[in-house]
Length: 203
Image 1 (tube, rainbow, N blue to C red):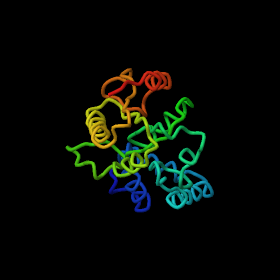
Image 2 (cartoon, rainbow, N blue to C red):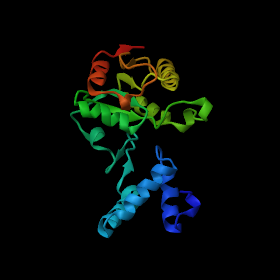
Image 3 (tube, rainbow, N blue to C red):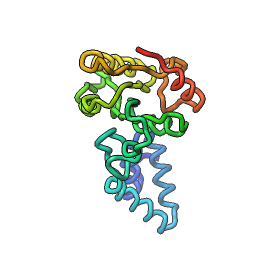
Image 4 (spheres, rainbow, N blue to C red):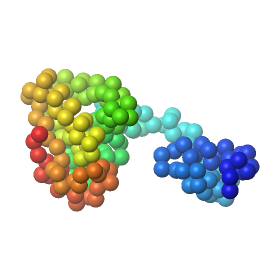
């Protein structure tokens, strides 16, 4: 069915949903129809949760991850090893690593990867926050958990150069290359992530 032939309210919801990552027009329409079939109470609960999402979540000023408090529970945990800083591109990569329960250091979420072709330069990512963490003098090891795409390699090189030029006391390592070329951390299975983290390599 053409979107133009949909009833106005349904078309409006489908158009909003289609702007979300991974949802094309057909998937957005199916999601909108599913919402329409929900009992009124459930539909209202979904609407309220969307409205309060931004109000209830904040970005941690220490690591740039999403949390309900600032600092987030990981950064505020005195039992974490604050000498180890694991740099990830997105929050879901942090979640994938945390699910293992193996890493006991802290994190920094860059908010993406350097991608000149897409107009994503250093100013668009959390490199300023990374510098502030390094300036604090507590970090002794940077662990780069960025994946092995071309953009990830470029980002890793940028961070390595930053550390080499301004922070000679900080070692830089990366997840072992058991991660296949062209893949991202957030899509890796638990065992691959575990092995990669345990056998990380200096860069």
